[in-house]
Length: 336
Image 1 (tube, rainbow, N blue to C red):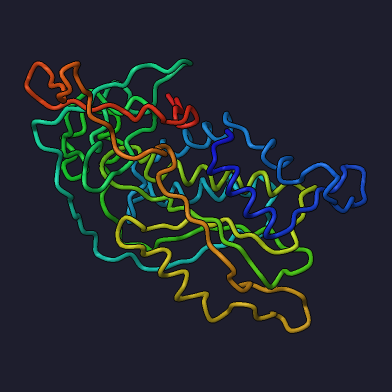
Image 2 (cartoon, one colour):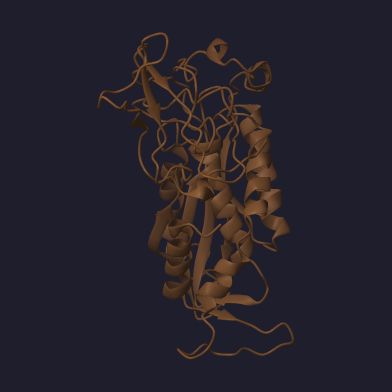
């Protein structure tokens, strides 16, 4: 699990916050240019199988749509996972959900079909494999899977119509009604040892929509933030500045969770409470790194071209597309 994004994120979080690894037996060993790179040591702790297991765990709650019981259950599950990494300071932001709305982007024309790309080695597949990616080529992508296999059927409009979801299991999973109860963001914080009053925020939105399992949008980002929280949560990892791992709720309905967080916490930044305690419930925000739809690194599917230089069509006269040849192997996450 060493994609450029992961290395970049670990590098930013680690070098900006200054990471110190403590020997299991006790004392700290300050890092020097000649010493082992602490950033690389953190990168080495990332585990693809743990990431995949977290992603698989998220799919049990379907699309995790805001304002549903499955969304509430997912928040509870996420908090338990974060606490299992050793965090004892999990907190939530609570707000009232807006009236649910559905905005549907333009569908892929009926003349467009997305075809499986050539294999590039290694076992493949993804959540949604065999069902196709109903979002490929759409104006607004939502995660129905994650793989170099971007689909083999035309878009179905599943974002708006539950009956367009061909998988009966997923359709049943996402059939619960809207419930008018408070919605929660959830987060944990790695407290800085030298500057606990300053903080980096590493976030993703845990909700989805579209009558699917919300694997790419944004299970992929949520699982990544949780994997980073696991690595940084180790007892032998210390950071000079605080790092908060936050899972927003309600992004699909209009950034509701992030807006609620800002409204409730912005004025608290950098204030010591209680006075003289050295505790800062809301450290000053230095920077925020957001993770959304992490499984595709290289843009939209590319046209399948024939020897004549023209885009190929299938037997029904529909234009054919394939995943970009440069798609990173890390994106081929099989969670089935």
